[in-house]
Length: 109
Image 1: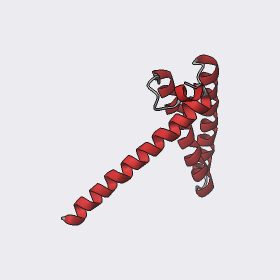
Image 2: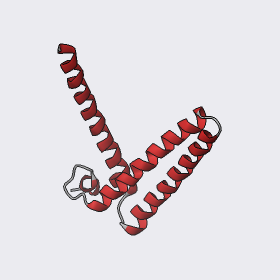
Image 3: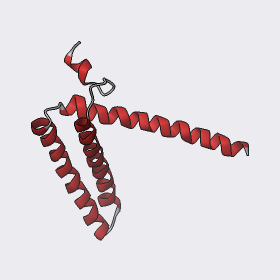
């Protein structure tokens, strides 16, 4: 087996370190997106809060990079980023299917 095959998110050798780093990475991504939106659309204190969220996202990104590379010795791209995208897409598909079932149930009543 190649190295890439062993590090894909659906390979059974995933561990708690990768799970923890994926959570931190997703939090950093969410903070970045919401911080940009808050800083752009907000006024006054909201813009400052958006800037704080952006700074927090950058800090969490560096922490994720440092932990993945130097502490846990896992690949940032193959283990963390690919896993985050994989599970976010799976979660979105699950939410959309659940929402469609919910809407079909209410439309029938």
